[in-house]
Image 1 (cartoon, rainbow, N blue to C red):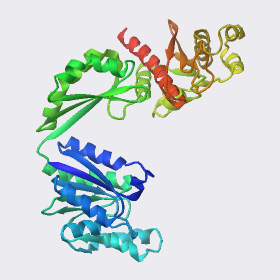
Image 2 (image 1 turned 45 degrees about the vertical axis):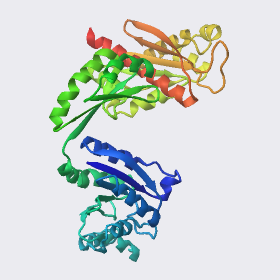
Image 3 (image 1 turned 90 degrees about the horizontal axis):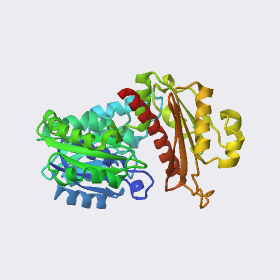
Length: 415
């Protein structure tokens, strides 16, 4: 079954908000084995919306719209779509009662124009809005099946998952299952080259690489009649990718992160980590404390931006700073050793570098970074030459630092 998504709202055309709704809807349709060949963005204009509906109905079995279901004068999606389907809007008593109830509970006066949100296309399936006042609707017409959803993502996504998904599942004749493998420590072109034979010979399942900031992912996708059959198809492909890329595959899942993987390994092994940061300015500490449960394996970190504080807090020798400079292998090593001793941690990682845009020299250019790691039987540093903006260099540095911890912990697991 082919669907088209029409996102309605002038603010989308003006770039004032990001259209995350289309992404979420596309992902759900893909999971259900349904195709999305076109997405359209149209402003709050009845004539242009009617044109978009006419075009979509000519090339898709179903249309999903978002936006334009509010109480204001420019919220005309429902009325326009009803007219397109040759239907009138009539009062839906249950929605009207809920509207009145919401305002009464909040002790607020309800403007009369709010009542238009309870006017629904006759004969439609009304979709409940558990969070606000705008219900959605499904119209099964001769032209197309049209599903209307509210614009705010906080309202749209729950309605999509709780109300629309069960409806769509009844229409699906196949399912699409995807698995995302997160990869770090090998460049995009090198990683793609390694799995090139899999990409060239793909049919079902398929494999697709995607570059991210400082890392990449491979999305493996299979289409089958059932979820279990799709999973069966995915398993051998996943095994081949993992065999080829080895420990560069650090996690699986759309929302997986390097810090989440590190915290999981630290907790499993009962280990603690600390950081000594210069150019990243606390980014490592921020990343690890984003993960619930990180307090079990992380209790402090040190941001020593100046040479004085590197000496005072971490015990970096004045001679080292004078002879080699703050951005050096020697300083990185002394930083991580000092941090480990001060925090009494099992593992310490240090970062020092030149994030730019200024401050670089021919000998030490922007993007030069040293990472130090210290643990039982381990005291070493790594030199990086990174490119990109200041933020990109800091982000990639933090990923390399966390990956150094991950690899040390994986090594512990193999002992």
